[in-house]
Image 1 (cartoon, rainbow, N blue to C red):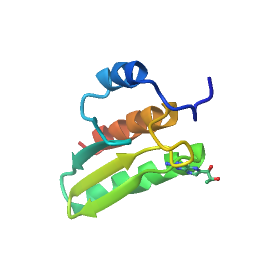
Image 2: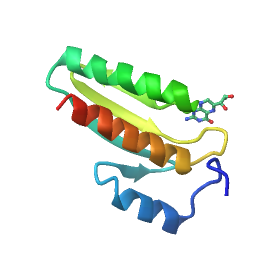
Image 3: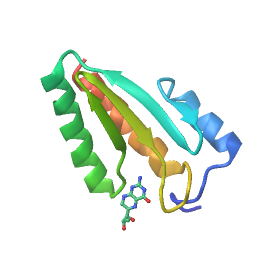
Length: 99
Ligand code: HBI
């Protein structure tokens, strides 16, 4: 199984159990992070950017003041893969580090 293989519905449901902040929307998973302030939000974005670049897998990020809206999907696969679940966990950790 490649990390770029689309997850089955069961694999996705199982994976989201450990990612309670995330929800499925169409062919993506999404969550919002509310940071303490705008600088903290940007620090989270920077931390995520470093990790995303390291794994060559990148989120869509909508930055609105201290609210960060993350959308993850594997564009080359047309849906959610294990890479997205892995990046989601990294985003959760980056958010917690600024909590
Ligand atoms: N990020 N979310 C996401 N999906 C991709 O398919 C993807 C990516 N980052 C880089 C990437 N693919 C590389 O394969 C580039 O070669 C396109």
